[in-house]
Figure (cartoon, rainbow, N blue to C red):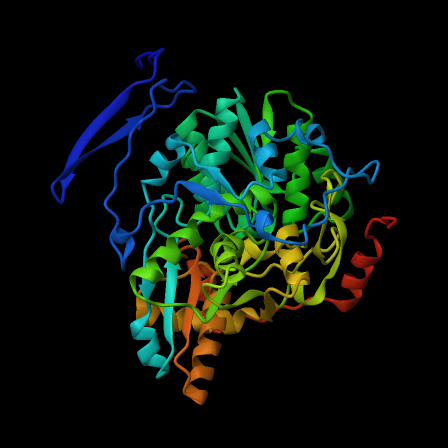
Length: 495
């Protein structure tokens, strides 16, 4: 007969040493209870100049430095500016305060910094082998966020979101995920703070990336393919299209519906909103210090964009430096040619989800009904761009381009075979753009400094690489007719 499970959580402590320091690993047997005293984490981070910078103590809020403030989100029923209390049914109170804040800096709680120490500061690495392969005079640097437990930049915001919810006494959090990077990050963070976690993963990625689902489940999350039969919004989509590949907009609708109809459950978002981009600015703040240690100033900063958190996290602190006259880089957002919200969308108020449950946000959008083709960069298959990035784009402070996926994977292979890291499909867009820029420098002889965001590894995306290597990958685009149909359904907002 099996022994009865213990009524109290049990921890196994394993001590290990390295480089003259001792650390401890705590492995918790499954339980919903956590010790009241927070665990302490230490980690020696290797990588170019990482040891010369500290983990930032504050998040940076770009809104404070913009002379023209971004348009406010609107209540979907009244079309009037949103009040903070309108968001309280789905978001933690402290996250709502950060969402609407115009404070220049927001202190990072020590408990969050303590978890950040597991992987931060992340390395800034010069891609010397790639430079040699391209025979370019340009100097290429990449800020590598794949060292986090979840393998991407997403825990930078997942940890604070989970912590603030736990501090408020929330028991469960729900979310959506595309490729699974965000779902993995929130599952990881929830496991640290004793939260139940439920994830709706876009069906196309759920089928393509089974190990991401298993990663989430390992950290204790419950994962549904989206659209699902669990929610009314999911069932409605399946009724009209039983084979729907899903989209981030649909998955958001499902998660928001659950949060709005269950007390004690809150919703967490992995991109788009101001507080998410705020948390990601630890990337750019570290990168500035690392470049200073090298006596380098960037000429071009590149990041892939889907919802915008990776790009904003790297770029926003550099925009501050440019505003204050300390440097003058060009900022370039790179999106999939099949989901081109910045380059082909319109700047308008739209819902963040397909069912129209979210507030209306002024953003570059393809329309909330738009369902992108199932490209391998599932994390970039979102119909809209972060309102703050959209606003910066409208102000002319950055540029955007779209690149098809075959060129992206060609760049990824070049990167992997020179630098050794296999990128996730999402940052291959930034790598492809960096290679374009480096080859242009080869043509002109310019010795530009190019900085790019390498936001995650592709260890669970090898099926995508297999398709490319076998020659079976195809470039997907979008239907102009479907785009116009989607844009025609945008909410009518009176000026």
